[in-house]
Length: 116
Length: 111
Image 1 (cartoon, rainbow over the protein chains, first blue to last red):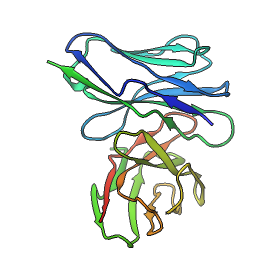
Image 2 (cartoon, rainbow over the protein chains, first blue to last red; image 1 turned 45 degrees about the horizontal axis):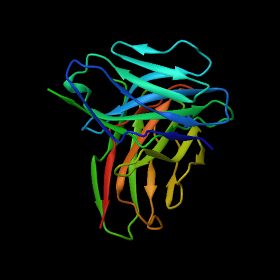
Image 3 (cartoon, rainbow over the protein chains, first blue to last red; image 1 turned 30 degrees about the horizontal axis):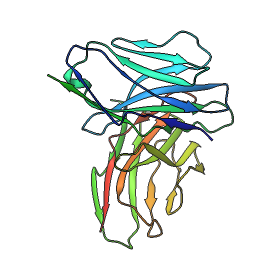
């Protein structure tokens, strides 16, 4: 079974600054995807970024980037130039690619508050 | 517009009653999922379906049932056997094996 751990229940950052959210996971799988989702106060889950485990290059999406360390089973999210709209709960999620199921295993989340 | 709809947004039921949560998607996705979210926790998988007329139990399926008669629809029934049904329920769909897209959720309160 897979587990995903987010050790920072809450974080805050000043507007325009950079913040990094941590995520570690435990798996015996070799082929998998990792995701970061955000859940703003509306509670809509929004995909932020995806990383394929076979890719060595870290994924980036505008102000969002990841630091994927496969050997260390670490998958952190960096948010640059933080904006007030980035205030949300952020979830790290794991999806294994073996077998037919494609379920996501989520961490417990990190509540990020961007301060004006 | 393409997307996933869940209705209603808020649902209130008395203990002992079954209740069905709706999930519809017009994204032409094959796979659909139901998750439960409790305060301070991540999402946990209840059921998933990869094709019409087929579905599998997730990690916390006890007390829940689903059907998948149409590609667009994946309703979830919370039965009276579910001991702690009050939660936020999220439906998702995907073109496997890629990312899942979520609906806006239904907040169920059972008293």
